[in-house]
Structures are given as C-alpha cells and as structure tokens.
Length: 170
Image (cartoon, rainbow, N blue to C red; front, side):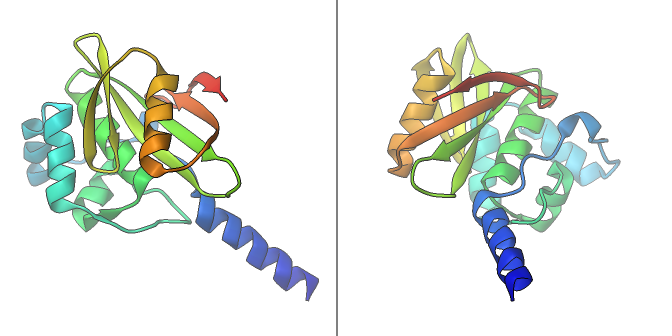
C-alpha cells in the first residue's frame, strides 16, 4: 500500500510540474522539406507565436517533452513544448533566446516561457501568446507573467539555448 501511495505521489508531482525542457543542443534538424519551409517562413518571434496560435493546441505532456519537429507534426503541446519550439525557430533565425522556468508559491504547478531579444529589448511568449515588452530584465518579465497567470512567484530559473543556467531569482 505504501508503494502504491508513493508511486501515485511521484506521478502526481511529475504531472503537475512537467519534466523540463527538450535539450535543443542535441536536436538534429530533420530533412522534412515541409518542416524546413515552414521554419524558414517563421522569421520573427511574432510570426512564430502567431503560427503556434493558429496551428497548435494545448495538451499537457507530463512525462516527456517533444522536440520541435514532433510538436510541429502533432500540433499538440504544453508550455514547455511551445517555449522550446519558439526558442528553436527564433534561434534558427539568429535571435538571442532564453527559456524561463517559473515556480509559483503554494502549488506544485510551474510554468515555462520563451524569451526573444529583439532590437535590444526582450519579448516573450506564454504558450502561443506573443508579448513585446520594453523590459530589459528577466525578473520584470517573470513578474509580468505571474500577473498574467494570477499566481505569486516563488522563484525562477533562466536558461540559455543550451540549457545552461543564466540567472536564478526569487
């Protein structure tokens, strides 16, 4: 009985918190011509987000994070999947990109957003929602996203394209 409770508890935690990002440094660009053409057309963060809004639906992936190509094929993903897709495509077009993992107080739920540096300012996407900001710090964007989510910030971690930790904050 104790093992069953432990397994259910672990699965619940994984489901509520997600399993993390897909590591883009290991992603090999597939040779699917339709995917490559689509990626070529999504040459700004705003276009990327509009594409996700029009083509992707939200579906939690509590056990794994699909690569950008798999997300493109299935058209279903959660916040970390869409954040990874957005960062991959923007980085492909030469944008400086980051991902932020946001933890909330009083819940096991966490959230992922993508950051795009455009003309020395940061924009971000929350799932498919594109939000240009006149902010120059990660914490300002995190605070704004917490306001959007109507949740109180516990802490956050900022990752670069290769999933190296750039900043941690509370």
